[in-house]
Amino acid sequence: MSVRTVLIVDDEPFIRKLIATTLEDVAGFEVRQAADGREALDIAAAWPPALVFLDVNMPRLDGIGACRALRALPCAESATIVMLTAAGPDAERDAREAGADLFLTKPFSPLDLLRLVDEIGAAG
Amino acid sequence: MGDDGDEVEALRAQLRARDAEAAAKESQLQRYAADLRETFKRERARTQELRDSYVATVRALANAVEARDAYTGQHAERVAAYGLRIAQAHGTRIADDRQVEFGFLLHDVGKVAIPDAILFKPDRLDAGERALMERHATIGWEILRGVEWLGEAKLVVRHHHERWDGNGYPDRLAGEEIPLPARIFAVADTLDALTTDRPYRLGCSFATARDVIAEVTGSQFDPAVVESFGAISDAELASIWRKHS
Image 1 (tube, helix red, strand yellow):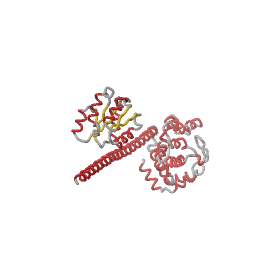
Image 2: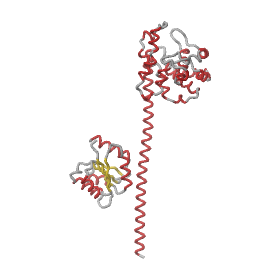
Image 3: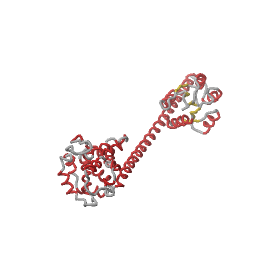
Image 4: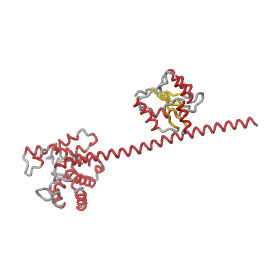
């Protein structure tokens, strides 16, 4: 288990809580939450995340912008970034171009989320 | 007027945004519900698979014991069926308990440790041989002791030769000290032994078996269990016999 620190970034508190609850006790993660891209960057600078869940549509700094900025941070460049996107090939392409490793389409399947985290943990 | 129109439009937009948010939450919850349902169905299927493989493993173990002993044939399966039928007639829920059926099937598993010379001796066993033969109950229990999920089944294996009057083995338990499934099994085992052909004698009829069992009720068998057994018709016993022969 290399993944220890997880940053959940979504402007919807409901979604952040849902993800945090879903991951609770699964692998002994430490979880932090951010409501937009700016807040995410502030947290990441002081607290390097191993895994980031990143919503696309957010105020101030959206997921695409935040993803690019995270990749430029030395402390977050090796993080696994999972983009939470709308369905559709464009959203997927944008996420990849911004530097996301993986993506989940919203509404996401909690089982997919857990499997994804399991695989990342197993690979690490 | 124009300002009012803008305000209304702004409120409408806010409402639309809120509706969209609520719809997004709902569809996300629907995903959780769908995943939960799938997980539940998968777990149920896996539990069934697991149960089936337990049954298959128990059968294999029971068959391994039987394979040595030519006469017994499908004795374990048959005696388990008699036992479950008597349990049902006795009005006890143990008939629904898989563990008890496993105990019935595995009752003689300890015989794997009994030498051929004793197990297949056509003459009467002497005292020493008989003592060794009787160890099959505790040996069976020891073999299964570490298998947590067999639960009550292990009690059937250990106590299936106890007698109501306390003169059985291995623990000389008496009356209701003997676990009920073991008391029920004892009747089923005797019934099958009496009605099955042996190399040196033919099996008797169910009617004769009932008489023999009645004679040792209160000494060997629990009278209440024998009474329940008495309520099962010959036709039903015969149909169990046909199914497992």
